[in-house]
Image (cartoon, rainbow, N blue to C red; front, side, top):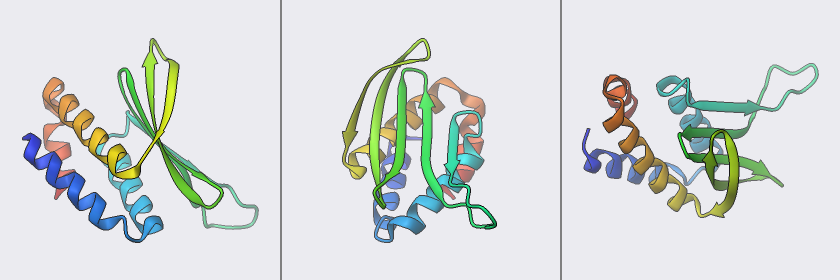
Length: 125
């Protein structure tokens, strides 16, 4: 998978972001199915309700952590630096920047882990 493919994926994510909630749900489903060992989805638990809305998405690639968390009704994008499982720093970034950096991290991960290539190609289609 080339860098161009990930750039196109990032562009499509930005395009889909017009409806934030639908975008977040679709992104969570794609990441959870494609990268189950690297992705954690937190859902709100409501008593007597089958509806479990997403409150956070977290994807970790070695020393980089990407988190999208719901705060005060909207989602905030964060990037973390992780060393030996410990978060050393976290910064809030724009959603477009978060998507681009997540795409770059995905590209690097695919280059290092060839067995994930087919799964990620399926993810893009």
